[in-house]
Length: 412
Image (cartoon, rainbow, N blue to C red; front, side, top):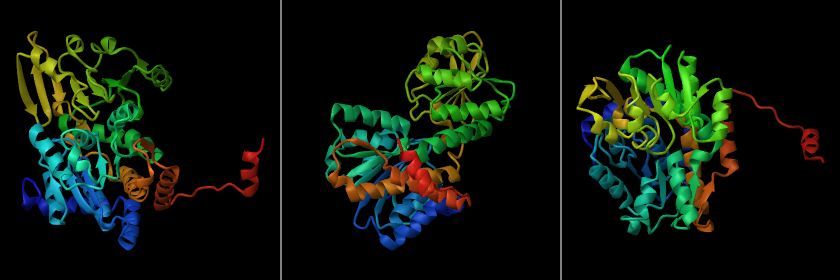
């Protein structure tokens, strides 16, 4: 039985799912295929992804393939109660409530896993963490799974290196059709959607500090610069730092950037990127936001210790008032600003990511028993199929090599 906030919100959620469906042509194609072939017949799939309209449509696609689907969120603030109600109305069991406490959140994850899934779809690694800890008994039937995010991949690589993985996993985040588009263009747009919606502030003329120049950071910086921001990038990787410099951004340490920035965005996947010593140097009125998976990149505990009072100034913005009169504004409690204050990635982008998820889940269903307990890349044939389906849906053409060209490229 589902655990949701309000079943009466279902109709509102169904409208949102119907809207995104119209902009997800690749998933629509896969759904039609799955309805005919029923490749997941008899399988149980547990999903822990940001529970909003695009994710809900993914759940219906997997169910169309014959799976019994159990859905929960991967962040307490990203769950949309109307979407949870909509999925419940469609007969998909859901365990998610917006604003759940961490205890409730973990209980919801555990409830989804208690159905002994055959396949898992994880976003950030919380499912995997539980299945290797307090929920280990629920891993009994797990064939394998897929991981959606950079943060989750980091955690899986650590387990793989330690040799402790209980089942094979596919690194969906590392597929070309995921990180090249979802991370760069999806994050690049959705982060700004959330910030604009919550702050109503102009970006032009402001100094934007982007912590991390991976694909997400590149997208955020690209859009910020396009809207007139003066962009500073902070990095720990020398190649990415050089790339940022050659892309036209200033590159410096966070210590040097702290007194210059008007708006700070963290997209590193690491903890303590902005800490007390940085807060001490910042201007009054600065805005801090995070687009990394967990709320650990901006050390809000240290910020809270520095403040004489904390006030909710408006939706998604808390003001930390410091003894010297400065105020530092933190968005969305340091959680993912694009999915908490905004609508998350555009449907057109998630069409690619969730198509990769769907076909990766299918690959696991068909091949997991032959695989070792390791982290694997998404097979290139899947990545290429999704790209070709998207090009076709967009009405775009693609040249093909002639036999002579193929021979030439293979010649010594």
